[in-house]
Image 1 (tube, helix red, strand yellow):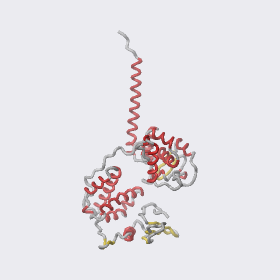
Image 2: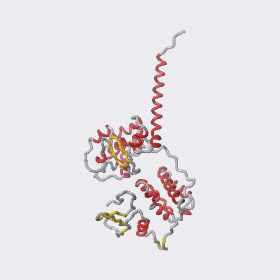
Image 3: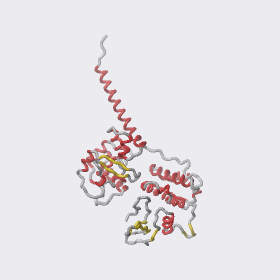
Image 4: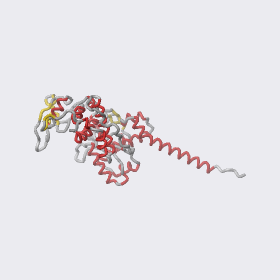
Length: 358
């Protein structure tokens, strides 16, 4: 059974399972389910959005009562628990919920038993420095802690800002668009599921989390009609001739286009790991190429085809400021190339026209 509610409004934590029986849904905490050594199955309240549901989970995990009695309610863990059942958290997309849960788990592991009043910006800064070699991860953690801090302060759960004065790491340009040589390398040397994934991303500009879900049933009048997992935004991507020619060689079968060699569905992170292994095998030409970089590659390609920023946003499902950011370099490069061509023509004209002798 799926661990996610049918309406997709909240993602269930580990070991919690949703069971539907006679048109009614039930929730159970069942560690080790499906293994040789399952734990006890405990019935949970029926509403995952209620405080009682999450309190029951903590109780069955042994977190509400410790050796010395009830756990304090003014701790970092208590504030995070309250945030995770708040409308502010449940109102964001499932993709954002997963990101926030992952970053908040870092905070709970580090400072869960610490009173909120004792958590200082210096603690957050120190945690970011642990991820100094992963500036993107560090910045995601800071953004999540800022959200938690702002939410807690407006509800008197945090007596002061938890992130005041903490600055994010400077971005190094983000995921770079692929070079023509990298695209050619994929066309010539990459095969199997990874080839499908790369070409789908190249010609549609969708995120990896959507690439692993796309299939024949998403085709709608010459394009892909889908709802993005991260943003819940509806997009329609035209199937360009290059992609159509590639798809003509694919077997028509149920399920996603991109599956593992044994037919299992790909998880987004596993697809990344497999691509990284293949990238190393393809050699130096693929250095710094990332799957997410294909989103910017698609944006630049569409811009060079003459599409407007708004049209690109409808196709790729990307914010207009981000599209403009990716396109600025492409536009400047095109302008520079046109200027160089113009100057070369002028230089050639000056060589042809000879000055008369006096």
